[in-house]
Length: 138
Image 1 (cartoon, rainbow, N blue to C red):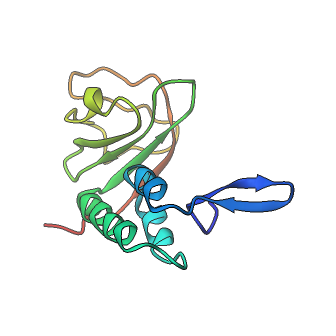
Image 2: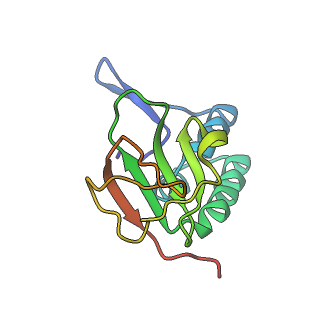
């Protein structure tokens, strides 16, 4: 990951960045903890963006697991789970469909082990990464 999560690419050898508060604010809801923490260190960060990043970190405070799925062109690539395995965030799309479902094997998940849901169905995309966090809220 780039050190500046607002970087938008390199064009003609020059790194470009998203600099307007409006554009940065649109990006924040998709940030995970690491991107939020990196964004807070960006020089010249606007007050509204700083506040949005702080709110985002509070939302992520009860995330204990992030599952990154193998990309097969599906509309979701990452899920955030709470301590009981409930999907509390889905990126980039389909949050309305997946949030609220429970992953029954969340404690034993590892790379390549398929996710099993509360109705005993298996998600057909294997995880490529499992990130574990200590819950920040009781």
